[in-house]
Length: 273
Image (cartoon, rainbow, N blue to C red; front, side):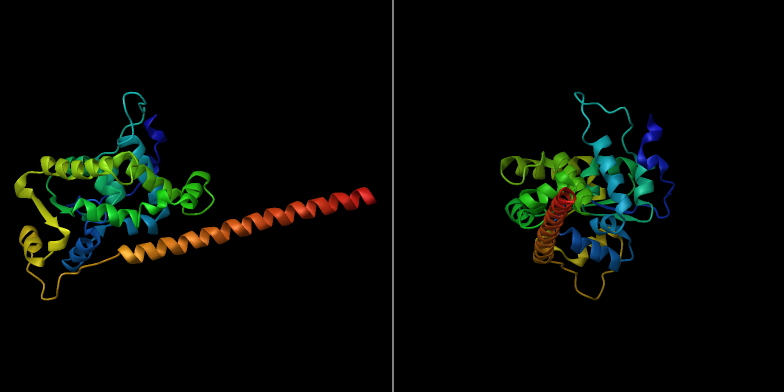
């Protein structure tokens, strides 16, 4: 029954009208665009917003499962997400950027047809290299994969949600022809979905205030365009998390070992008595 969806128990409502949809994939300059939008007075939704509200992770997981990962061979009886559901998820924001929202390009364009759409792009080879050095490590590093499958850390729900994001995007291919085709297909789909007068395509290497402000109808700020480079910072964060998982697993195994030894000693003492 439809009432069993998690989103149906969420009573949030839209507070701000959706004015901008940034539908380029992550690592194509979306962090810089989000920063620029903030300086222009927008309130963009980003992956950081999802991470800061753990309850959103389960809702986005549901959105992916019901909207993007159903098929004729494995149908789902629950309805997919549409404007009503996205209003609940994104009601506090007037702009949308980054994953997980960007993989819902078709649904968001349909839900908010009056919103301006920005498609950020990057040369595929650079994008793949950036993804392999950052986000895709969550799936290619064995310890992260183990944590996601077994659920031994607090990061497991987030990793499962991101794994579903890339299952929907490219079938969980982390490089090679399949990943490239999916990346290019995403951009082409956005171009087909949005009328030309409502679409701005921006290459990450050519970000400037003028085209963005002209498209959105804003005066050009006097300060320079914010160019954020999070590749190295994200890699360092992932390495820190990886070592944290190693320590967690070592302590957990030591704890199991101590309990086992303790139980063995207790049994020996009982037998001796």
